[in-house]
Amino acid sequence: MSSRAGSVGGGSSSGGGSSAGGGGAVPLAVLLRREVASERTASERPELHSGLFSQAKKGEDFTFLKPECERLPGVPSSSFSAFGLFDGHNGNGAAIYTKENLLNNILSAVPADLNREDWLAALPRALVAAFVKTDKDFQTKARSSGTTVTFVIIDGLVITVASVGDSRCVLEAEGSIYHLSSDHRFDASKEEVDRVIESGGDVGRLNVVGGAEIGPLRCWPGGLCLSRSIGDQDVGQFIVPVPLVKQVKLSTAGGRLIIASDGVWDALSPEVAFNCSRELPPEPAAEQIVKTAVHSKGLRDDTTCIVVDIIAERTNSSMPLPKKQPGIGVFKNMFCKKKSSDSSSHADREYMDPDIVEEIFEDGCAFLSRRLDSEYPVRNMFKLFICAICQVELKPNQGISVHEDSSQPGSLRRWDGPFLCQSCQEKKEAMEGKRRSRGLIWRSVIYTYFIKHQSAFSYTTRPHYYSADSSRSSE
Image (tube, rainbow, N blue to C red; front, side, top):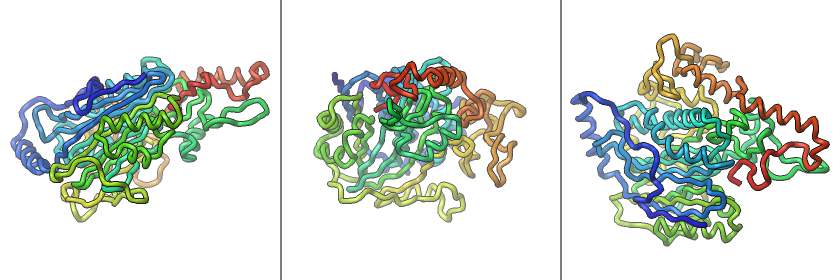
């Protein structure tokens, strides 16, 4: 079974909000700043063309295409585009919920009325907060499904990608390939394996009769192959929703993005995906990539691909892109995200005309105390007595610092912000293995039962609660 959606105005873009703003009079200084920003960025707005194609096996892949969004309603200079891919497992509930709520949560986490420079600087922290809030809210619905998420925001020539799971976003620009996401599979990261084990999880392969181990590394109980996702409350809170965030700026040559589920990447390398679709516009390109992947390994899983062409207005060229030269692209750092004493300002660098892809920001740490903290000036963009995750207002004596239980050396103090409400603090503790979730306790009881009675289940010594076909991950 296959489905196809049109390019830029595709029908799969339903769900999720697209604006956020506050009421009241707007100060003159703000209006003037907006006018300057609008003039400054008008020539930087690229032309976007997007296409989608999918072949379904389980019906658990969902997409989000919204080329026209505005942070501030009626302000064209606040426009951006958003694209998302949600590869569900163990049902489609988490994928659908995330598709419908994630963008609203992102915009709610960004302080209102920021200029473009500050919005882009605040976006990485807002994405972390929105992913965690979406996960926390979904888990109150007592559903056991989960989903990968690859979410892309394009503002001018700046691309910001947040991802959990094993769907991927890959960029080809000026003949080189850049990976804007990272697989959160246990097989791909010993650091993630160690984190989950230290938080109370058990990571290992499926054991069969005779003690042989087969298949990928999984988290037990549950059998999930992924270390990060949204949902999956029955596996354990140490399967965290904290995304890797990468932010880059394209040159005026533009580029092509491929956002695809693991049904594509398990069959094709990025080089093959770009090469097989090079002479095609986005929608036929997405179709060609999916069909090439399915032809290579068969339709074993939902296989979905979004292609986005970013064409800077200054260039009169259009796709196809130049052929890739040997080697993988290497980012040139625009600035170091942990330093605030650069001689030139963020704004000066932001509006330079680079001749290569420049990296602005990257952080994949799984711990909220680091990801929600920010150095000046980003820290001052966020209100102090607002929960950094769910955005509820806090009285001065209600907030709990993200550094409350920090053992890190240095100047971090438990009374320093940002602050969390009580329920978000409990979520943080559960993610770090300091508070066991009810779902995990229930699973541990079942796991203990299987271990004690393994002779009755001679096919395995590590219980697998799902059929070999499901395995709780996008396989």
